[in-house]
Image (cartoon, rainbow, N blue to C red; front, side, top):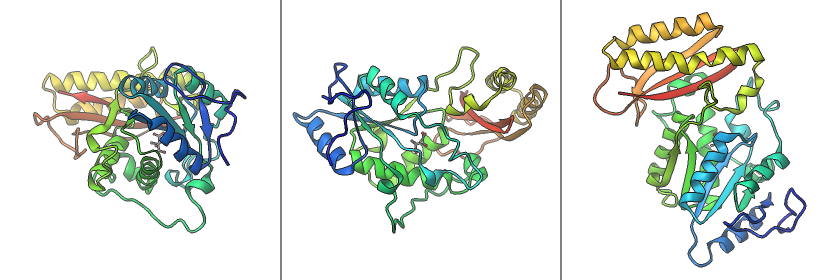
Length: 304
Ligand code: PAF
């Protein structure tokens, strides 16, 4: 099996200058096309996604286009990173719409494998990155980061990119992937070629996320309180307020705005994500996960 017709129904011709996107779900075809893109020493930037693309993803593609000759995006809703009570079935799937967006951004190649291609019968390997995976979202979502690390390692091996681009919105995921790449000697991309791209926000400050679409208009309006309350806490901490007090106030503000639960609101070392109770002089991060109308929103910002 070779290339499929692309989603717009044209035979594809890859290129950096806005030519048509190619889409494949076949591993051998992916390898052939990646080899073709590489001819003449061209570089490849990988943008791994689960689809339902928004401006945050498209910013990753733009960043990858600036840095590399060709961009390969992947869309794969990875069952291994969803817990039994999570939204795997409900997760939005819109391949044609996503492909059109990627084509508009000059992406050369879309890798959209089936579950059976990524996890064929007998698949038995799990990558578990201890330490950095364990707190924060890892504590609430057992196995989630194993699923992320395993699929991202496969994507790196399949595409062999020079650089890979991930949003800082999923800050713990980025730390897990950097640690895995370093520990497993994934030399292409090397750990320092995993690029974290700053979070893209809506006009009211809410971090863009495929999950924002689950919110009613009331909850969506209330959700904007999350980045505001985080900024207020950071301003207070930077001005010398005890972080514990500032974070208690942040929790209270979120509860008053209608968030039913705060899973965590914590300062941490920005590299290894070890929780800290005071600023240390090293780069620090405030990480928050909170639920509104049953939807779990996460955000993070630099501190200090
Ligand atoms: O951030 C995501 O969309 C996913 O966790 C990723 C990195 C594509 C792995 O499935």
